[in-house]
Image (cartoon, rainbow, N blue to C red):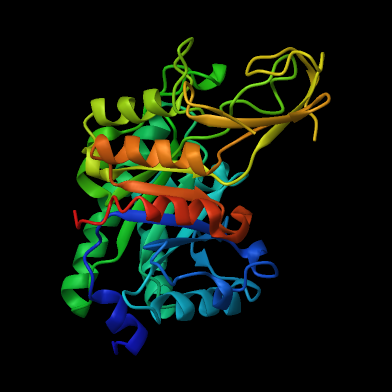
Length: 349
């Protein structure tokens, strides 16, 4: 198998700390890959979201619509110094049943894994990010652990045979190692042992703590701290490291979007203020978040100050880095610049 110039460049750096962002295919119109600001190394990894397996054969599919966008993204990312790595994010919302069916037997897992490696090499990408939202019971969590184990073995075997750098393997996961907000998933935990052994890192989705389901009161949907509950980024990340996943393999998620409410009373506009529904700045260091309001309209979000607080927290805890969802929502690269401006997370893991 030949190695393209872009592939040769992308092989050179170590995995290192993650300063990542998800690039949904729908971002192409607003964020053409050639317009991404790579000038100050804002990013080390980009996750192309989403690609999915065929629901019958479980072969990974790059659609005719995705292929040119992915090609442009890989070219733009790899032609940087140092190169930015591109991973295929497989899954997203609405495909849990496909993963459930695929992961239930060794032969279907094997077919899926084999196809992912073939697709990665054919499209010159650097690895995979599995976004299964989410295994529904303990049996599926066991299957997820087996999938990671077999995937890692196949990646290492292919690398030894081809002589190319091993493909990266990550997963987008719930903000906590165990589910407790969704009643039907309560007490369900991820296979931390398999994750620690087989993944390069996990992307902990530390956002959407509050949203359309909370119509009676405002809430910071990505609070770093919450003195009244376990619904916070700090709790979730600690649960992951306490479960046995090495700190350097835990990557903190940051939202580049906000969530809004319509206030019940314009005079009551703090976090937790009574609301009458979800509708269309103040920096709160206690929660590590920001909010803005005008009249009865209220929105919670991350600004440059809360991003700085969170990135410093992650660095102090020895975590593996951070990522943004999504790249197209970061106006003028304000949040990405803030993360990089701190000059933390610059050492190789």
